[in-house]
Image (tube, rainbow, N blue to C red):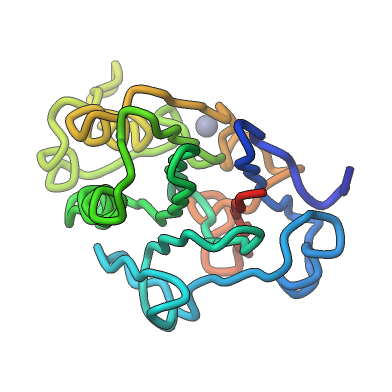
Length: 215
Ligand SMILES: [Zn+2]
């Protein structure tokens, strides 16, 4: 077991990891300790709904990747945003998505599930994995953002709004017929010894890599 990463889940041949803040080497170095043969990730994440299909398309500028390639790890980088994997074990289709409020609002998960269906995947048979991200207690948002997600925002006793990114994603995915969810339940902000957090550490915050692959 590698010390620079946490295994979030392994289910029906799908494997899901997040790096910790100890992990400082190149993403390809994680392959030494997993059964994946290569790793692909966006060169640039832009808080968009752009999802690419690997290897048909290049991953230069996007926030999600879908693949049917066995033993290819697909990854996104975050430091508070929510990484989401969707895995269809019967048809062997895997996706990973970088979900902040902008991506969720612009429909990145709808786009990802559309592509899964196009490839013959069944959302009802798919698993969704939520990686570590900022929890609602730690995630304060302004009213204009809260207004976009009325069902996923709560006002605390001081009148401050807190957004639940994971709930936002789950609500969207349930409408798209996904019912199997695996939650890491780890908060990036709450765990300074383990994770980077943009909200906590500001501009100097590093990024975690979250990745998954199919065996
Ligand atoms: Zn927290």
